[in-house]
Image 1 (cartoon, each protein chain N blue to C red):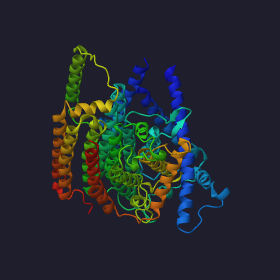
Image 2: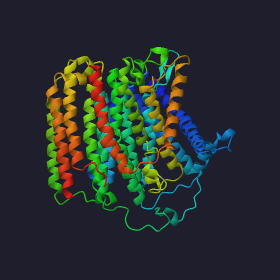
Image 3: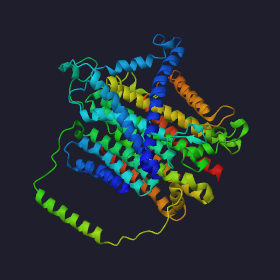
Image 4: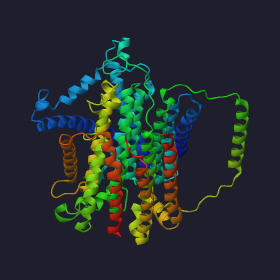
Amino acid sequence: MLLDWLYVAVFAVVGIVMAALPLALVWLLAPRADYPQKHLTYESGAVPFGQAWAQFNVRYYLFALVFVLFEVEVIYLFPWAVIFRKLGAFAFVEAVLFIIILGMGLIYAWRKGALEWV
Amino acid sequence: MFWFLEILKATLAAIAVFTFLAVVGAMLGVYLERKISGWMQSRLGPKHVGPQGLLQTVADTVKLLQKENIIPANADALTFNIAPLMAVVAGLLAWVIIPFGPAFGRIVVARDINIGLLFFIAMGSLIVIAVLLGGWSSNNKYSLLGGFRSASQMISYEIPLALAVMVPIMMAGTLSTVGIVGIQQGGFLGVGNWLIFGGPFPWWMTIVTVPAFVMFLTAAMAEVNRVPFDLPEAESELVAGYFSEYTGMRFALFQLGEYAESFAMAGLAAVLFLGGWHGPGLPGIVWFVLKLFALVFVLMWVRWTYPRLRLDQLLNLSWKGLVPLGFVLVLVTGWLLV
Amino acid sequence: MGELAVFIVLAVLTLVPAAVVVTTGNLVRAAMSLIPSFLGVTGLFVLLQAEFVAGIQILIYAGAIAVLILFVIMLTQGGTGLSIRQVNEQRLVGLLVAGGLAVALGVMLVRTPWPRSAGTLPASNVAAVGNAFLTDFILAFEISSLVLLASLVGALVIARREQ
């Protein structure tokens, strides 16, 4: 089992190296004709105006919040999904209860407008 | 000594998978995408470079390698460079668990991790961070907005993805991909036990497996920002979203990461729902590659068939449509299996 | 021997970014440094043969919580990359208290007779966790769903109060 994760670690390292290779090649091969206008940020041709940060809406945060909670719920369902058949109907009922409670959470979020984009 | 040999084997496997992805996935995939989209639009696609235009992507890559290295002013250089690398590594790591088929008595898979499917979904989560950091580090309003919108879309579709994957897990009782393909063997003509036809269970299991398959493909398309879910990167929208400021090879690396992930999703759909390497007649690996490319073709077909969804339509589809549907599917599957 | 080397690498991978998180003035850098720290913790779980927990560590911490923290920081003024001052006038007192706590914890760790479990690992990590959830710890399983519901409602109440 430790061997599995050794493979994962090696894959990650090899991936980083092989992805950095083209970047290194570019650094060697690319022309260098640098002047300040090249580094202006892109704003459809106009000169950039104002800071890059503005007061963004809280709706991005609400989506991430609801996502975290439902992801944790899905995590709880993974072990249940693997083993529930061997444990009979009681295990299934337990999960029904679990999902219903969290379904109420989804309905609450829906009704309170946390899932609206506008 | 044992560990050294294993590290060597792992390195070779990683290089093999990366080459397969770069050559088949990126080069052939991009070429196919351009050709197929051309035919669907009554035009010809690339034709001149190489026989039938096959070397077009090679030419494009050589061109991209010579592009000047530009980092926008005031951009966070470290993050600007890390984001595309993270996207590629996450896309590459998603391929660790995908089995190709039997060869020389063993199953060809980089490593059949015990918690394979959980690991795959975790890699999909890591790409979200790459997108967010890429959008922020460019110091550009469009990129930042595009990064936020793209990240919101990707996280909204991770729950339906996980729930769709839960159905084969419940039917097989294991998180390992090789195990899930294992229960799909045998059957009528080598096809009858595919999960999309109900697996080794009676035919009425299809009322859960077919919707799960469709839900998986939909969520997969949204995860990799493909049309009809590509609002964050549509040309007529926020320029190019989170990679507006990325030029040259870094842009190519982001695209490579997205292509690798979309091929991995198609491969996983073939493994989970279409029987992996099982099929009548032809050797297993050939069947798997055929199924992989068939699903990739379906993804491209959908791209040129449906109009783009607006961001709020997209998010509503996920949270108000697919998430409840996913929970209902899990409950019905559990009830049918008990 | 090899395991010790791997442990040291993972410990460095966990602790150095963690130090960056608490000392750097740039909030986004701090949030970014959480991610290698979480991945280091994943590796430590793998060394303890807890595969399932390692998998959900990547999925939840590096994939969901890091994203949430990044969202929050980029939505506030910290997202512009401005530098926040990290020390105040009470550095000396803080150092003394932290040092005292570190010594106390070190003494406790060294002197406690940690019991060694004689059990064997189950063949399948996830199945064993599922079994435990659904038989021995069923009450905890159901109560955790209530806790999640409570946190969802609470977070939404707080987050939407500004509107």
